[in-house]
Amino acid sequence: ILIWAANCYGANLDNFLSAMAQVESGHNIKAFNSKENAIGLYQIRPKYFQDAQNSNKNLSKFAHLDCFKPEVARQVVISYFLKYEPKAFKTGDWDTLARAHNGGAGWRNKNSKVKKNLDIYCMKIRKKMK
Image (cartoon, rainbow, N blue to C red):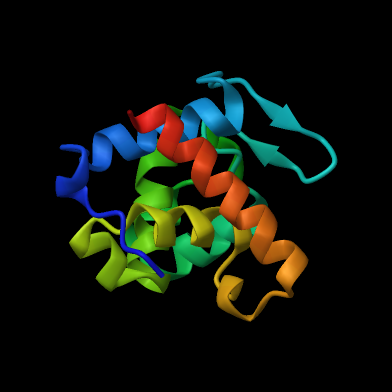
């Protein structure tokens, strides 16, 4: 996997999260996907929230619905990344982080059709980061 690192385009975590919010919700903090019960800027699902909460006890005071709040959603996403992709988080490997966010913790074990969709998702994120 080609690492699309932070220094490639001067990108940083804020650029990445902004791009992800644009792709996921159009920066709509009230976005709701009833099919997946995904909410907020980053379209956080209950399982994703629970995973992040289990790895960061500071999130224990929040409920899934708090992910409508941008500051909580940001903490949840960062906690999820630190749990499942700490190396990618530390090196600014935005592609890996995007794949983990969109494909879940086991994204590397998905079938080729899902991986192709993850590649498309990464391209969308890249375009928004430029």
